[in-house]
Length: 142
Image (cartoon, rainbow, N blue to C red; front, side, top):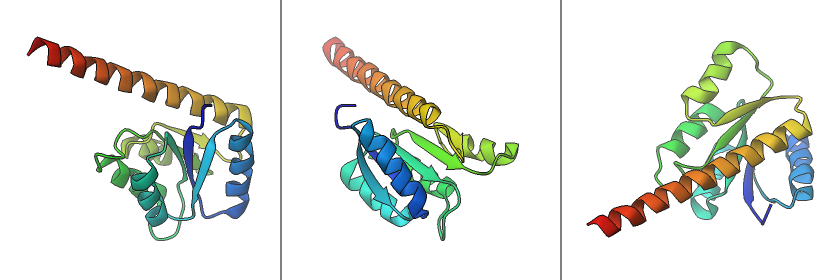
C-alpha cells in the first residue's frame, strides 16, 4: 500500500520477523522497535501510518506506550493495533481505554490482521481529509 510505514513494537523476535514478512509482502515499509522507549523515539521521528504493538513488554507495557503516544500531538492520531495473547474482557477493554484503535489475538490470522490494518489506515486517511477540509472551509469564512 503505497509505501505506508508501519511500526511493529514487540520484544519477541519471531513475531517481529513474521510481521515483517507479511507486511513487506503487502508493500508496507516496516519499522521495528523492541521496546516502548525505542517505539516512542521512532514514532516521533518517522510518524508511521500505523503502530502494531504487543501488550506485554518489559519495563513499559503496550497500554502505557499507547497512552504516551496519545498524549503527544505529533503521534496522537496514529492508529494503534494491539497484538495480545490475553483475551480476558478487562484486558481487551484496556486496549480501547488507553486509546487503541483495535486489537488482534495471538496467534493471529494473517487475513484478519491485514484487513484491520487496511481499515484503520483508510479511516485515518479519511479523518485527516475531513479535518483538512474543515480547516480550508474555516479559513474561507473568516
